[in-house]
Image 1 (cartoon, rainbow, N blue to C red):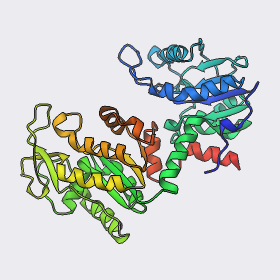
Image 2 (cartoon, rainbow, N blue to C red):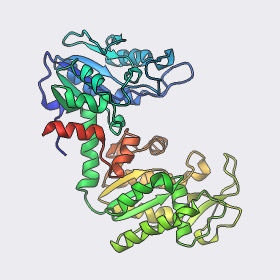
Image 3 (cartoon, rainbow, N blue to C red):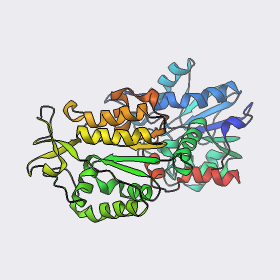
Image 4 (cartoon, rainbow, N blue to C red):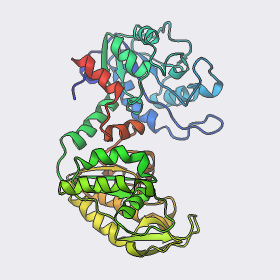
Length: 392
């Protein structure tokens, strides 16, 4: 994948515009509850400042109505947190589209880019005007790389130089290593509540992986397709045919979709639900499958530990409740023990990684969310395509 990298450019004295992803979660009063995305973006900011760039940082926050900003849409809390993390004041600039003054070695944060009319529709005039603000445009927002917007795509076309920041480049390098030229066996774990939300991913991975582990409600639909009872479990009977097609494709390639041989069930989903393990063939009509069983976990752990490359998206069960957490814990620990190159992404997956304390043992943790999923689907990311086009 060919694109210019910010780290290869001379930034001294240049006006540098970094499109970052600082879209952090906030509480009802606007307080930041998790600053992971801000911390992940710091290397790009620090490198640009150390190189003597006049640095402008742009990001979106939430889902504002274009042209109608409210106090809750403001990046003021982000500016305050960024100032604290960088150890220097980061001014927040409003009404910045028509011009920004920033000296070399200084940084400013530009108010929420999605407030600007035309941003989300990638308005050409807006993109040209913003591109004129800088000498070098840097996209370091992998989390927004699947969006065709003025600050993610339009500016990349019109800025004098367009390149990838260190965070975006690292994401693309890791995903490319995992999917474009993987060390075999290539094993993918795709889990979640519904096949329908990840059908394209399942189809795409079925054409390339050596093992495809399914979990959660997705596994229940695959179990139905294989003729196993699922009781009152979350499943999609209407997509049994699609599940069979994925398994048939894997089988035609001598690849496998290992299904649960035992599961953990309950008659209700709650923190106080009484859980017990049964064989997969013995799920009662009134029971719900809420985790994989110990035998299944051991089998899957053996596959994981023998893999050369692992892609993980989704927990195996309702891991938020301890009685249904063992399956996901076993998978997480197996990934931690494995010598494979591992990449993980998705909100629930990141929560599981945090809960089970394996972040240091995962080769790469993607913060991309929707962009991560679209990459797994095999869909081109518009922002990345724009950088590739500029790289010639």
